[in-house]
Image 1 (spheres, helix red, strand yellow):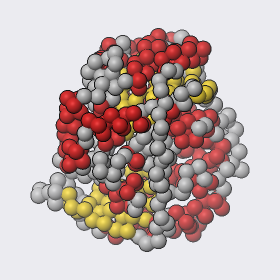
Image 2 (cartoon, helix red, strand yellow):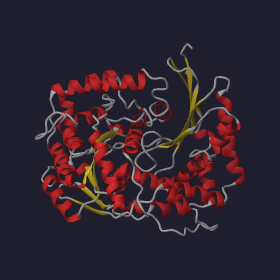
Image 3 (cartoon, rainbow, N blue to C red):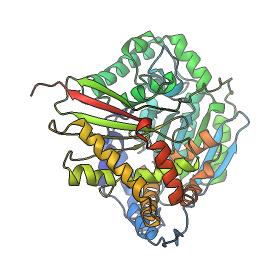
Image 4 (cartoon, helix red, strand yellow):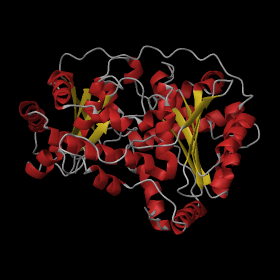
Length: 506
């Protein structure tokens, strides 16, 4: 299979799309250099000219997956990602996954701390600390980490999610050692000063104002819905940060947070790309091996009670000029049979223009121009979280369409699945879409998508090789299990509905 190289414009668009496809994703916005796009594009072209093998594209995957037989037996091979996994003496987890597709390397460092377990009187603190990680370390001054990556032709970013905070760089392969050294340098000793803290408090507060407070539908539904649907504070607070809490953060808070959660025994380092395993192991031991571990507190109880009644809420939006509606259902526990069944139900009901809800709400009724969402929608995917989660859908619609009409369509489509059952043919079609989605995720951003899954499975399951087991788990799902999952998890009493009431004067 020949790798199809992207030109500079396409690469720039895809990277921009990855960061900004939703204004909801919490990201550090890095300075961008044209050189970064150019060098990575050249790397892609070189890989193509050398005729190297590449990860199949989504269209390739869909074609191959269409070979599924009526009995659900897959004619093509399952995903096989090379995984070498080990732990340093200080507790740092390490995942190495060589990929010769292109002469680039991805370094991803994930810390097992997300906004779900930040201090109760410091909402937004996990995100604030993500910004602090770019303010300098023992050997790299303010902004020098970013400059180091970009002047070597790479790109970088960081984000804060429910259960982790991550940092990554994609660089020419010969700069792998440099990136490992730089990541170890800030894990070893962050430059925590009052000046840096005050500066980043202002940056984050401005980010909240721009992305949420001064935007129509600013927190809808990614920030709003968890607060309405969940009961446990850890899952239900304003994780972007209340402005008063952000102001209240002290220098001692930051130092304590760093010393507690940014320790090697609370992290995983993932390397994906064109590298030699022995060399990578040597560098990781050299730069990370003597960083001291810490006493990491146990994760608090994150469980949610079983929801027994439908919840409905209305939120006024002074900047919105059209109503919007979101619905959420509590998910099955991660890695259970029902969890995988919900992944396939998501494909049937919500993913793509052939999904049941798109066909009903957009094509048949004309209530809206689009409907989107999913499992862990807008803040990741169905694999990169650890605690309770929601399956969520949302749409903006015409004022002439009552919210009850939209909910009625939702109920009709779920009841249709219950009444008619999920046939093996429909299940096979969902598996084709899921398999394509998996390849899409793994090939995203030239190695980062694969690194994201490997890091998540290392952090949460102590088993990054789960990446190679996903297809088999989905294939275990039967029509009977789909019915059982629909009855328990897609019941109206497990649902929360959020209605946006527009207040803007047109």
